[in-house]
Amino acid sequence: MQGIGLGGEVPVAAAYVTEITRADRRGSAYLLYQLIFPVGFVVAAFIGAWVVPRFGWQWMFIIGVIPAAIAAVLRPFCQESPRWLASRGRIAEAEKNLAEIEKRVTKDGAVTLPPPVPIMSDWDGKRTQWTELFQGRYLARTLLVWVLWIASYLLSYGMQTWLPTLYRTVYNVPLQTALNYSLITNVCGLVGTLICAALIDRVGRRLWFIGSFFLVGLPLIYLGLVGAESAVSVVIAISFCFTWLASICLSIYLYTAEIYPTRMRALGTSWATFWLRVAATIGPLMVGYFLPSFGITGLFLIFGIVGWIGFIAAFLAIEPRGRILEEISP
Image (cartoon, rainbow, N blue to C red; front, side):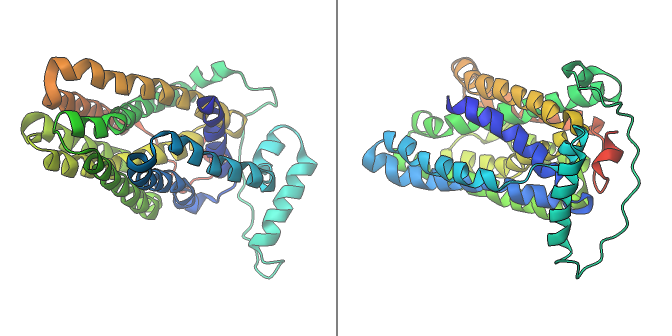
């Protein structure tokens, strides 16, 4: 039930925020919004490290109701995207919402807006079909972004789900220590996302994916070959890995929403997040399957190879940085 709710919320939110932010700051604005994810992970890990040993895991589900209730209260305050309204022929509503946005941006007319940028679009007004994801320029974009989603979230869910258990069973550390180690990893993910938010509009999406996937795979390959002797070495390497992996897992939402036109932006993002859920299912199962056969070092080596598959695929990405959405995807 919870998965159905989040599965519908997240891709729509990615499309929505992308459509209402300006081109030259879209990356940083979107990543600052996405910071709520690693912040949530850190807060959840901190609460879990304190609550679970004292009151049991059931209380984590009870506490989880609070942010869901807050979201329900805040949702009605969101305006509909003017881009989406215009794509549905609801021009008057789009003009009204855009006028309200312009009023805030110009501080009630005190600031002059730049002239509109002329845009070209080849859309004929027909309702989009899901098969368009595999037509023309969007075929290569769709297949590539699916590979990036699968690689990043196989690693994220595969390791994040099992790490506390691996610390306890493979390295025999106490429960509290295992939870604290996971908290350290989540804090590093938050730091990585902050770095990404500050640099993504300067570095660009393509170069960020290339560099980050390489840096994700590097410590995992190291652990797989020589470095998994102790829990401390694993914590250091995995924390470095998650510094960059967390930024990929969030910036890939931005990239996916950018490479599709408004008429199919939420559709393309939804299909991409479908593969997120597939990867989130397979990743933890990979740990359970490979660990008994290949040991902890073999497991890290396999995850490192997955990271470098993403590194190779990222070279094929396009660069949306600084371009208006209609230019990227007519």
